[in-house]
Image (tube, rainbow, N blue to C red; front, side, top):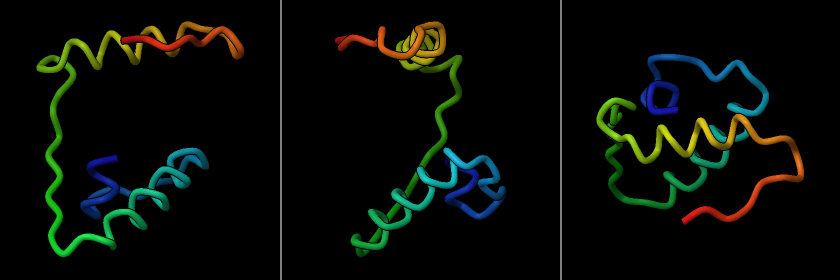
Length: 65
């Protein structure tokens, strides 16, 4: 999403287009906005969460702290 918001890539997937629209609307309410990409290798907690979310079937998601 970082690359889409910066204008480098287009959001072609329908789900990403929805995220892009919501993020763009939120961003427009700020006077200033900066976004930074953090590679997965440098953010193991988020990487683990994304892997966990992608392995669950619909209806099996639970809150994770």
